[in-house]
Structures are given as C-alpha cells and as structure tokens.
Image (cartoon, rainbow, N blue to C red; front, side, top):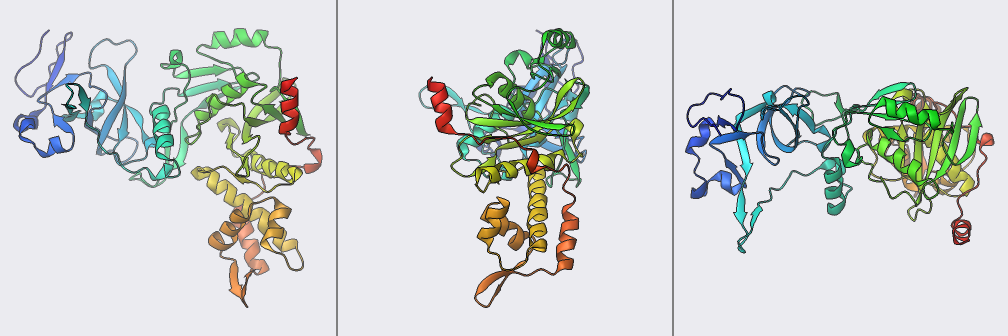
Length: 457
C-alpha cells in the first residue's frame, strides 16, 4: 500500500491508505511523559484516513460561530456512492457543550493537523485498554444519576433520521431549541436519536402508517401496507370528542406494538425521553384530528398506570406539523382534568425540557391566577391544590418564586396581588389554546385490581 513518508502536503492519490502529515506533531515525545500523555491523548505524526472513532480534533462549527472547537469523533460512515478513504462523514461531540449539539460533519471541517488519538496503555496483565478522559459536566441532564446518564448518552449519541412522512405531512426531525451554550444567542436546530433496529441505521427518511404507526424504509412499502390496513384510528378506547378533536386511551400492555412505535417516533423529537420498549406500565393518550379519512394523530402524552410520586404525565409531544395550534396546552390541560376525575393532585415527571418548562409554567399561571381572581374569601394553598389538581410544590414555585405574590404578614404567608397585576401576569402567560370541555370526557380511571383480574382470567 502506498503512503507518503515526507512533506506536509495532502496525498491526493486514489486507492490504498491515505496518510496526512500532522506538522507540529514531529516534536511530540510521547515516551517522555508530556502534557499530552497526562491528558490521555497522543499526537500522531501521520494521520490515517478515515479517522478512528474516539479521535479528538479541531472542527469548524458551521451551525454556531463558524470557529474551530475541539470535538470527539463518536461515529463515522461512508458517504453513499463513494469508496475513497476520505469520503467519510463523522458524527462529533463538541467538548464543553451539551450533547444535543452533536452533529454530522464533513472531512473539510476538520483541522487534521490538530488530530489527537486516544492513548492505549497496558493494565498490568498484558491486556491493553484505553485511558478514560473525564468529560465535562452536563447541566442539561443534571437530574440523571450516573447510570441513567451513561445509558442516555449511549442511546442518543448518533442521530440518523432526518425526515419522516406521516399521512399528508413531511416533517423534518430538526428541532428548534434555545441553547445558552451557543456563541450566537437564540434558537439552535438539533436532531435527536431514536433507537430503531440496526437495519434502519443508515436511513435518513422513514415512512409511517398514520394509523398503526408502522414504519418503513421506502414509500412503496408504506403504500402497500396502507392498502391492507383496515384501521382508521389509534387502537384503544375513545375517551373524548369535541368537534374535530378526539382522544384515545391506549394501554401499553394491550397495544404493545403501537405503543413502541409511538415511543420510537416521539424520540426523534425529544431529548429526555428514555422509554422505548418497556411500555406495559404506561397509558398513552393520543390526540387526533378527525376528518372523512379517519383520525389523524396530532400529539400525545403518556403517564404511569400507578405512579408512587403522583406524576400525571411522563412524556408529552405535539408533532411539528401541528404545533402553534394550541394542542400542547390541550394535552397539559387534559392531564389535569383526568387527575381531577381520579380525585388526585398531579405533576409532570422531571426533568422538563426547556419548552416543557415554559409550557407548564404558563399553564399553572393561567389556572392559578384565574382562580384567585374569581375567588372570594380566604383560601389556603392546600385548598387551591385540591381544586386545581396542581401539586402544592408547583403552586409555591409559581406564586412565590416566579411571580413573587406570596408575602409573610402577621405571622402567616398570604397572597398579595392587585387585580391589575394579576391581569398583567395572565396576559404574559398567553391564551388557553385549544380548550378542554370536561363535560365531553367519558373515562374510567385505571384500576390495577381490575386489570389483574382480567389478566389472570
């Protein structure tokens, strides 16, 4: 195999191993115990393409500040239609930044003179192992324990699927978020990973049956399935209908395939979601728009059948094609209406995403201040919690920490808010979106004993 032993120029010959001089690496003495060795990296004199997974290198970050940042190569793949060792693209993690900023980059974005290879050492038994380099603290996932964070990062380290087709809609999986870590303040556009089976690893687009949520690599496969599919709505029981909006309750144990397909699709748009296949212990509430063709999924929320922590919502998603129509507010409101029918107070499962936190705080503000504005007489925080089904901790978060309406007077805490201040806060919280009519809900709360008896029989 040909290689270029000298010079700093890129060998443009085709075929064989491609070697590139690393310039400044000539003076690096690994054996002498340099700073590079202490950092568990080694500078290579010649860089072989394609670059190995685990390599660190400077990368020009086009989607942020157009400057070079240190990255770690997480994955690589050959560009379709090319066979040269240089025709690879690399999935990189920007060191010091949130993992949701990870992305695929081209070779031209990498400064090959800055390549750092993982240092391999012997562990005393003759076996070789890689030194572990401590990664930066990830504040975005601070609520995860060490095992959960490792599992989350392993599952979410590579994103492949760029678009999905669902019914009449073609949706990009690129999600807009506000990230303070970016050099240019504002919204960043990211993709999240979903653990589809290995045979879908290289798919950049998936096609879905909008009723069963089965997924396919090619549109022709999806159309053949649709021709045979007789269902025109999600499985489960319809628990709500008002105009062209309806909702179905789907039991994860009874409708396992549908529930798993739903979770895999949702993960394309969500960072914190960790539920994929173990769906037996969850109920899924599917919101749909109805027309002459059937009931078309708009979004959903899920909840544990029996939550010891009082969570009334585990995961929530409004599909991109239906956002900004007030459907997210509808889903949050519906979760609390179901809690009222259960006679319980509820709260969403943590951690909340950036958008989820904003949405919930707006909902709590609207409900609590609207109730206080119309109420006459004394009222305790506990009474307010029971009437709204909002957990006491969430009420205190809003009234005390966010709105600063609770004051300590004459030995007790009281809510102090002039009508004009309440109106101002309500205006900032926005409208209620698509409203829920509690009278249209036809629903029986989950009963574990009843399910056990049914399952036993």
